[in-house]
Every structure is written in structure tokens, then in C-alpha cells.
Image 1 (tube, helix red, strand yellow):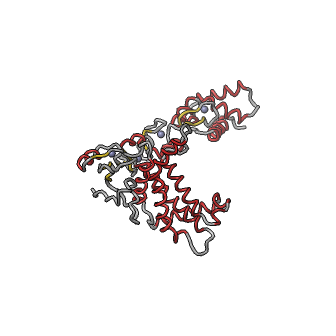
Image 2 (tube, protein in one colour; image 1 turned 45 degrees about the horizontal axis):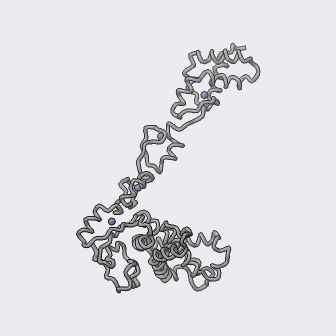
Image 3 (cartoon, protein in one colour; image 1 turned 135 degrees about the vertical axis):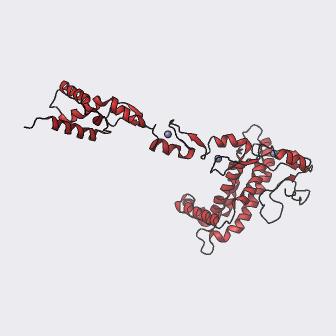
Length: 354
Ligand SMILES: [Zn+2]
Ligand SMILES: [Zn+2]
Ligand SMILES: [Zn+2]
Ligand SMILES: [Zn+2]
């Protein structure tokens, strides 16, 4: 394990991320000693951290695009390095004072409901919005621009560009996201608050910390999840293998379930192709065609003969065909058109040559 980073001075006791160095924090900041020289467990909710980290890139892209639109001499990639540093500093600093600010605020407005959300993602979004507002140039302030499709496209393109060039790799963003998460996690829902006197005890705790990240065991899923959230993840993981929801024999990935159930699943419900009222699992079509042959024949005969025959005559003919030695052939027809053709053929053969 990395040794804890030395604290720059007695005035700064919190704020893992902004130690004053210009370098961005690296992944895995390691344990940190607080005032009482206790070692804090470094783990936090992996999914929440990942979600925050994902969000930092489009957040930065938006700031860079808004700040350079209409500027002939600068484009987003020129300003990205500086704005990244500024944004990280700004958001980290806001996050560091967040809990203190919130406490003061709630004291001032005794009864008033606290305005601030407690979802870290929402809190950081507010900080990012505040930051981006200060960076917009003239065009960025023109009302239509912020809602325009071309802005969205430019941001998407720039996100892709930064992704491809690994300008701000995910691991680095996750390290920052972890720091932000801890700073604003006022209810300690998203990070582990445990502290220990020495490395040994901390290591012992870390091995069983409920926030420790594990990789999802489902084949193909690479998500890192805190142990405590594993059950929830598993209940939604797209790579989980499940029994078909319509109870056919098949076992398949959750992400393929919907498509399977409406396309190839033999248990998918279908309506009778001859227009009976019943619906049944697709694989029962054969049985249904055999069981209800007489009704199907009647429907087909009604169409063939229109009003030339009485209801009784039609019934008799349907019964006759159903009992004939051609029954097997008739029952194999899977739709009205093919049954009609077979019936017409049989009736033509039966007619005495005139
Ligand atoms: Zn822990
Ligand atoms: Zn998974
Ligand atoms: Zn199925
Ligand atoms: Zn039917």
C-alpha cells in the first residue's frame, strides 16, 4: 500500500484531493491520517464513484465548448488542460466546505427544510453548473445556445475526442470522484467512516469492509461494486443469466431477455391465425390447429362460399372435411390462406366432372 500523503500544514486538515500540488490526484489515494493521526478507510461506494467519474468528462466538455464557441482563435482542446485543472480545483474546494456550509445554513434557517440535496451526484452537478456559468463567453450566454442541438453535438464530439486520446482517463477521474464523494457525503451513505490507529488494523478492516470493491462475478460484466451493493447490482445486472421469463427451456442474459421473449421464445403468446378468440404460447400452435380444425374449416368455408350455402350446410361440410382422410393434411395448415387452398383443392377433386 502507498504511504499516506504528508499533510501540507496544520490549517488544512481535510480535503484529500487538494494538497496544493498542481498534479491531479492519482488513482487509489490510500489511507489518510486526519487530525488525531487516525487512518481512515479509503473505500467508498464504487458505483456512485463510477457514476460521478463518468459525469466529469461531459461536464468538462460542456465548459470547454461553451467557453470557446464563436471564438475564432481558440477551440475546446486548446483550453481543456487549463479548464480541467480549474474545474477540479473549484469543485474540490466547494466540496470541502460543503458539510460545514450546510450545517451553518441549517442553523440559520432553523425550521426551513434544507435546500441542498443529499445525493452526491446532484450536489456535484450543482458545483459544476456554477463553475461552467462563470466560464461562458458572450455566445454561451445567448439563451438559445444552451438548448441547441449543435451545442449537444459539439459536446458529444469533444467527449469522444477526449475519450480517444485518453486526455482524462477514467482511473484518474475516479480518484477525484472518490474524494468529492467523501467530502459531500453528509450522511455517510456513500463512504466508509471507519478509522484506525495503525496500518495493521486498517488492513484487517479493509479485508471485510462492506464498501470494498469487488468485480461483478457475472461473465462479461466488468462493473466494480461495493460488497454492500452487490445484491442490488445483481438484481439489475445485464449480464446475469436468468431463466426465460416466459418459462421456456432457455437460460439467457438479462440484456437479451426482452428481445428473446418477443421474437424467438416458443412460449411467446400469439393469437390464432385463423381468427379464433383464443391466444396461446406460440409452441402450442400445432396443437391448436389440430384441436380447432373444425372451427377453422368453418371460417374458411364461409369465405369460400360466401352466402351460397346455409349455415347448416357449411357446418356439415366442415364436419365432413374434418373427418375425411385428409385431416392430417388440413391440420398442418398454419394460416388461413394455405388452409383455403387445400380446401379448394379437395372440393375441386370431389366435384363430379361435368
Ligand atoms: Zn471501510
Ligand atoms: Zn454485473
Ligand atoms: Zn423463452
Ligand atoms: Zn384457432
